[in-house]
Amino acid sequence: MNESAMATRLYFDPIFLEHDTGAHPETAERLRVVREALDRRGLWQPEAAAEAGEPAPSVISRVHAASYVSAIERFAASGGGQLDADTVVSRASYHAAARAVGVARSAVDAVLGGEASNALCLVRPPGHHARPLGGMGFCLFNNIALAARHAIEEVGMERVAIVDWDVHHGNGTQDAFWEDPSVLFVSLHRWPFYPGTGHQDDCGEGAGRGSTHNVPLPGSTRREVYRSAFDRALEEIVAPFRPELILVSAGFDTFAGDPIGGLGLEPEDFGALTRSLRQVAEDTCQGRVVSLLEGGYSLEHLGDCVAAHLEALRAGVSPQG
Ligand SMILES: [Zn+2]
Image (tube, rainbow, N blue to C red):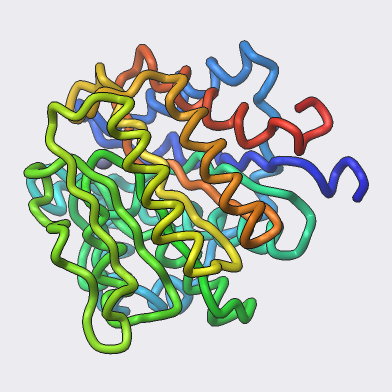
């Protein structure tokens, strides 16, 4: 394998900065601090933005109701406003959210096509709370659910695993694959907590029964307890599924100092989680991992958390790694 085929791809698009939420924890400033932190470490080498493109509404409708997709497009075009109490739409939001979907799909293509070993998509708005029928919780379109659908319906994968380590339960992702055995959904999250879903007995229905796994953890969880629960979930749930691709809902709001989350983790823990994940990916699917930014609201430390994740994705696979 040549050097470029071994690389970790980093995806970003300036339009993600134009999703304007006003005075809000999910702000464009998040991506600016991440960019600075990666730049300081010599890690800021994103893919050319134009490569991904904006998917058509019909592509976004593979997870979401077509009426919802067109409603968001119209709402944004008219200037936007509050979608719900904590979800904001601005004039550029439809195009930012659609481009986030496009970036996630491109990253899947690059990794499944052998052009990259793994990938990190620095997108916003985040996606894992967006349900088939509507957005919520800062999320408009479910980027990771659309990435998984793309891998299965267009690339032809049979088994995709989604690991969600955001502090909040990925209720939208769970809903998208509730009856779908081809997508394994594993979520570790603080509980009880927003959005209130993610009980450990919730495991899917019909053909999808057993392909949803929820690991609720109390807010007082210590970092070593979190990490062993994470490793156990990989070993007992993800590895036996034999995924052909692992997608990560990478929220960094489990960081101990996160202003709206917090579950005891320190920045270096995201490196450890990533190494565990990569080990399972090596054992099951030639290391194929595509990670998507979800939450993480500490403007002081989000950059350190993302850098630890990216450094561990790159270690041993990138030319500089
Ligand atoms: Zn979150």
